[in-house]
Length: 89
Image 1: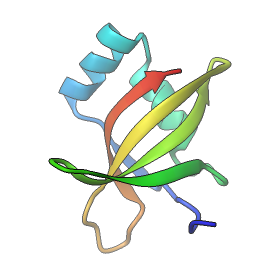
Image 2 (image 1 turned 90 degrees about the vertical axis):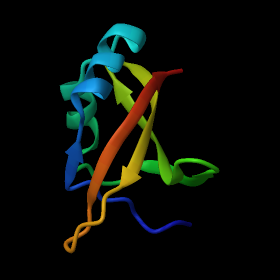
Image 3 (image 1 turned 120 degrees about the vertical axis):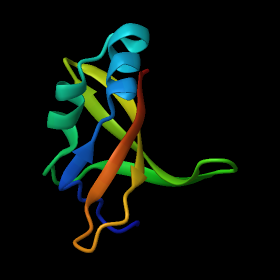
């Protein structure tokens, strides 16, 4: 079983927020609320050949299952991730 994933802070760029709203019909703040300081997140680590290591996290938003892509951010305290995208399943 993998180590628990703890998201203390989620960085969402303006570009990613726009993509979530327009392409995927998701509210970036709802994605943040579903991940930040939430215990027991279900996830797997995946390696992308161009983008590197990332966590694929399963979240629930308004009753829908959403796959969320998180990239670890180098931070001395840990727990900081950049949102890559989120896809309703």
